[in-house]
Length: 343
Image (cartoon, rainbow, N blue to C red; front, top):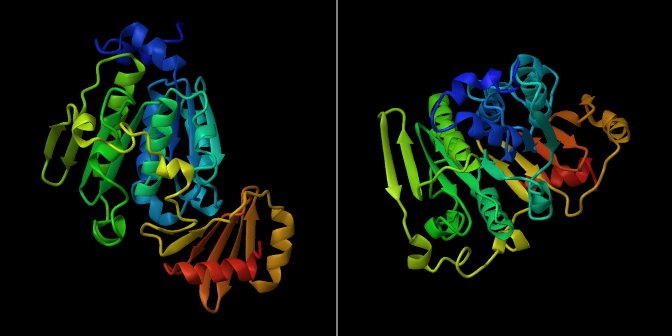
């Protein structure tokens, strides 16, 4: 049996063919975020035979994820697995011929270029603009194509970005929107069908790029509730806007000039706190220290402390990051981090 036989229905499509499938099998991609968009992106990419998939996510699986994050189930919630680990285990069972590399980490300006090393294309599975602008900077710096996607409520948007050929994210937006100026999953919720449509459109653009097909410079906007789709052709937008990133070479996010170290997590009543320096914690030692403060659970990837009064849940990863559930107040989260983690 030929290695391409499992993809024969895809090979039959004239836009792919045998040569296109061979290119997909040789391609290497990075998916940033393994949540709603990222889990659909990862599953579709692996089923399509993209040969190497690097998955990076900072979070763990929770029950409320299961409504829309297709790679996870209740066993993953019970096991308190990081999303990247749970996703990789599921994906390897779907297609054992693909190489899956899961990384439990927070993507920031100190590691993004390393994560993109040896990568042909980046897929945006994130839920915040700060990381998107960071990906945009790193993609421009390294010349790596990426496909932006976002979704909230019933609508979303998709935009392929090829450095030197198409407009970049900053051609459309000067920077991160002001807090409260746009809907989020906290205020508008999100429908799983919208996520699946947006992620599917992202993967199509990725497959075009990876197989050497022409990609239109356009922003696609879709609303599944209204069954509407619009494409806004962008043309020579960089030249017309004199874009600070792709025309003038500014890299604010990649330099670390526009980043925060504590982040409220969308729809979670939680804050992520990141230490100023990267570290490697002993989870055994941390669990032993925290036992006096409340019930502690752990697995090879994280330690969790449940505080009863007041009710907070502190989940600490090996790299020193913590997700503090039970508050959206960043100063409160930082105080709890200092009190219980102390690093």
